[in-house]
Length: 224
Image (cartoon, rainbow, N blue to C red; front, side):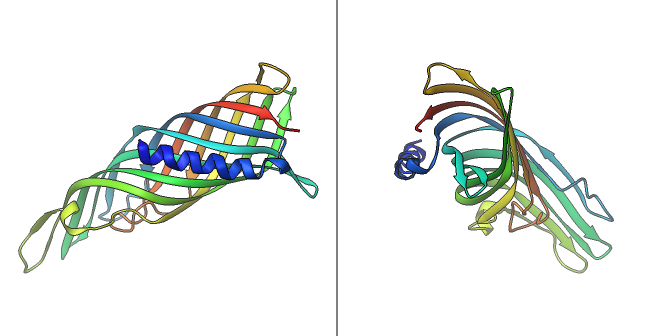
């Protein structure tokens, strides 16, 4: 937790340096529910199954930033998320299987070029996120066989230094409702959904991606 707290303080300092260009500064936090998946692409001898897990997230942002004729929102977010996976691939000459539990800490930059408001209360934001892996913990086993050779079974933490990909990107959409506390202060509950477009793991299974549901509480302060 100390590591995450230091990162958030750094993000707050960076955001504060650019508040002159935005109309609202945002601080938020909440929970996420992550689900690894591979589009149910069980073809041939390949099979997979996944189990979701809860995590948490926190971040800062700028809302209503005018750039030419577009209005942008930006976020910097820390995510802790996890999940379980089982995958098998093989054929007549051999096969391999993996069972793993993985949790990750990432930092993400969100850029939202589509922003609009309904009834001056309901906010809709659509954009994309680029993320970087900060830390990971993983445990599990990989096993397999090849025709004419001995079977093998290893702990993945013994044979891999890194299991996850270093960078991730995906689409993000959110909806929130504003409660005006004062002329300058707003509290907004928010639901958000992330759909990953890049592979989560650099090792087998390499086609696995992430979907995440979020529930946030945002605190917004008007600065212009």
